[in-house]
Length: 607
Image 1 (cartoon, rainbow, N blue to C red):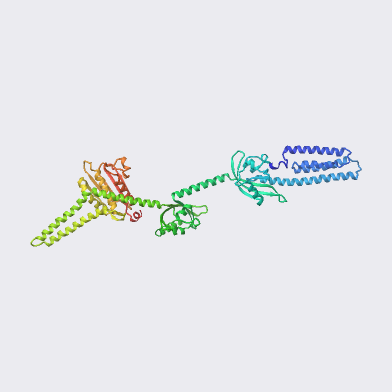
Image 2: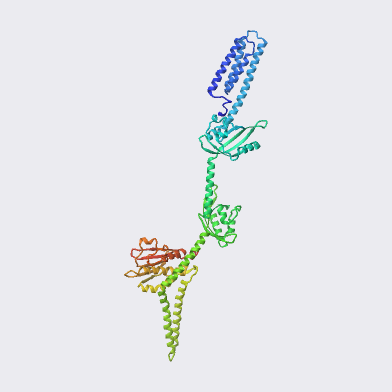
């Protein structure tokens, strides 16, 4: 309504003034018509009264004023004539009444149209969007309440102003181009930046329509404006978030995959496409994943999809892909299920390219194996006395038995049976010496880790044999406590022997400065259903609290001439076989070094 106050003055004060003025004019016309001898149709001027009252916009008041003017016309006619009425006077009275009636009808019709227009304007004011009408010179002719709320100017302040200047409009393209588009198609839609009355900037989605008159000439532009500032900020935040996610996924080589069941529909992120090396127009599906999966892992991947379809609570799988160039890629996929609003089960997870990690792990394993080999060679040098003793014993036995055999044969009556027995003893001692040498060569040889089923008690016995001389030299009392029946583990025989010898020699060295009894207990037992345990306990100086946390760290040592590699390598070997190693310092004194290894060959083999 504010936009149309000039055409429809409806304020109470204005209506009262108009009504009073109309009443004065009606009295003046009546006085002239009834009390003066003028022989003209003075009552015609009552139409002015009707029009003035009608301009107030009140229909009932207009009807009342019209009937009042009719009554005054008739009353004036009666008062201004005697009983004889001339035809001219009657005609003048009739003309006046017709004029009043016609004017009243037209006024009432105009009021009906005005009321309809006012109702339409009110409907426009109810709209949440800002509705603005401006002429072809950019002057505002209509400004609804939505425009007041959006821009901050009232309709009274905005009417007649230049829309673009008042709002400091910034166009996405030159304004002349927008005007040309309006004149060409009568429509335009785009985004604008405008400044509100309080100085804040808003982003506007504007839809403009051109209104033409009956001759086709452009007369005005009606525009609906919607404030999309919040949406634009949200879109920009979403774009930034998506950009961050894309960059993070690209840098971390992690893609996103969503799978909906039961139909199996899938969605991949850009990084997932890169990991699988598929074009962006490829439709994601289990089949295209199967096509990239390594043949040896295909059954595993299919099984995981079947588990997910059955509602598995967690999907966690590592497998290999064979790329179009023939190279192998390692991936790790983790996903959890979620129920959508439609009731479908959808798995959303992360696909990580762990090829570099796997390659690094393999390189680290090779480095650890090489380092373990170097330490074995070093350890063999330290065990030279024990090794020489182990080899010398069977050689000396062979020499003794050989001499005895010659004496039995050189007798006047050769003792064949005795000679055969001596030769048999020679063969036995030769085999014992060969076994010692083979064990030494095995430890000295550089080879890849070869896990196999190993008799734990047997490895303990072989390790003790290699260090027995050192045990005797340091006056260490050995107390084996081996489980019966013997336990078997799935490990590399040589590396397990290296761990045992290293732990034994550490215990021997820890007891070197002990004045009292030197006792070494080596025990094997079952730790639980899936793991076997080896315990090496000495009566040495023990482990301080300060050293306990660093004992297995690389380059940490408590020895003056130590390198700090022995226990670190032991930990690497044990953990590489799926076990763990730790140390304790019991209240009774000394130190306990122990480790566990998997009994189950399958789980260890997977490591």
